[in-house]
Length: 335
Ligand SMILES: [Zn+2]
Image (cartoon, rainbow, N blue to C red; front, side, top):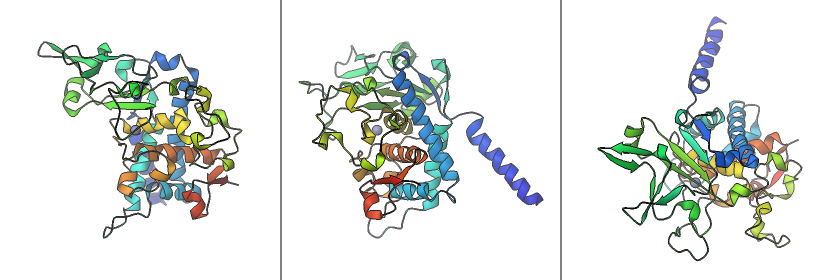
């Protein structure tokens, strides 16, 4: 009895020291997001999805739905020939660690107190480096350091910033692998720059037109019957709907990738503490569930979908128990 009680106490102390006391993710929200209440809701829901995913994972013995979702999203049966299956416990620990820490993210009013800064300005603050025309940099004064009398930008990029890709008639920056507009981007301090800054720092930007979306959360869309919208649902493919790229109401219309909250969760996992990547083909349900576990665990979009499934579960929907239907992302009523 004593032993049991001691163990419970120790486990509790361990948990609070890891998650509750000093959050790993300290975020600050730029006024460009504060001016858009729907984007503030999206950030809140991204954190909620992570918190729900982590808490449901801690109840995995009683929550078979989240266990099935976890296995479907992260532990696909596709292993390269001759290799061992990825250890489930290791995968579980990594996903839980990332989700628990994003779920415990704390908001700070002062930019200098935070290590994750969120913007909804389409990277308008970026400009060309005057000395090197092909390089662009973040002009925010706080992201410039003085090194040996020279002012150097902490965040730079070769070519136009990602939010500005694929503007009509603009061929300066076309990402060869992503022939579509970028809706969100995260920059992390390079290891060398962390020395000058004193810690890691990540800058998340939500790109327009996602910034101006009217529906940004699954919660705002709570009357939707998700049994009619599989996770593979793509608005562009739906011939019944007239899609106009400039129509912001097309976001958050049953297409999981079209919710800003899912995007923000995806971007949070790219942040300096976690550093997931985009492993091509990175997006879409069919692509994320066909990755070897090692890649699935390092692909930001897998966490976006897993978070969405955790929240959809709380809204009364789950992946179909029928494996063939689950592969197609078919959702059914959870009870
Ligand atoms: Zn990404």
